[in-house]
Length: 506
Image 1 (cartoon, rainbow, N blue to C red):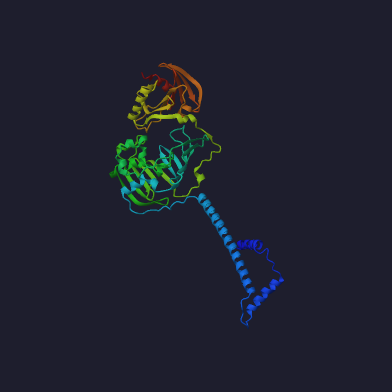
Image 2: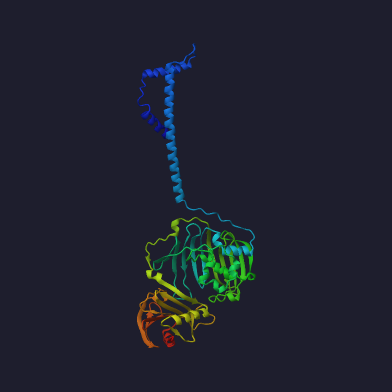
């Protein structure tokens, strides 16, 4: 305000009063005027010409001064308002979004209410940050940040620990970022990264448990039926806690086989509901045949599966998800969901974009056989094993432009009680010589010297030792096609015997 009045004084001096000659005689008139006003008058005063001129001058002065005051105030107020609006806009542009505080509900929930929140958890929290340890055949830890609202995105760091039963395995560390329809996957061992764009998932309306449970259990896992579930950030392992819809669809399907064990149990500061149940034999995972009973801890406010445990019929812990922390609706800075690629180099070959998976099946023998039947019909060249100790565990067909690639993984001499594929395997693939192939660890490991060569069933084989292991990698040619086989815990002599049963499909 002081600055404004100083500026006003300068403008009045410069523009209004600069031509007025206010000398000593004028000052004397003014002093006498004020003196006469203070002294009582003994005679009746009459308006004279001097008084009229004085009044006119005063009115003129006040009018001009008032105009400049109002004009200056108007400009100042406009400028002040404009500056205030600009600052407000700047604050709004840089202001981090706020999120509602989570409510720890202690209300009694029915089965229907629990299922609704579990299948629609994406609606009940805006951000989540946490860490958990998960065990399913092997152990991993996952640390994550996920944002469902606004610019959807996420970050996670996954540590996969070595499998004590597999001496070839080692600790692996990776990071995944998702932001603005792009995903970055960073391998901290090789310091390689891959970036790819994705289409935003369409918004799926509220999912009803009854609609899910009416589906065939096998159909739930099929790729083309995944749009039955709510949208979630892609490629995030954190989803097995935040939105594990397929898990719920499997374990809570038979409603009479589970119950609410506890309505309120504190876990990491969250009020959770505890579900306990028994798994129907028809739904048992072939990779985990001992699973029988389960327990699930559900955050009552969000529907997040905070914790779960699977037990054998003897009560032994078969698999689990154990949380270390969980924070709901914490505000993230934008750069927390963007990767720092300093020191990394791109792994992705642009040709990867043209690779397509045409068919794939694993675990279930009948489905694997269906894919192999398609391989026999569509591949220009196809060989397969015919040995009683070998059984196909997985099969797939990939396509690069017009080229077809056939993959089959065989289990060898697998004990009845061994889980999943077993530990002794043969990885096979057949493809044109000059095609582009998916880079998979089984076939791209560095090779040592050639240790043997042989010709069987019209194929000239060359056998190489895989560096740093006891495994072997054999390569054979037939016309314009290349055939490759990599062993896992299958000896060189055993492989040579098995190659005798590896024959062309006519």
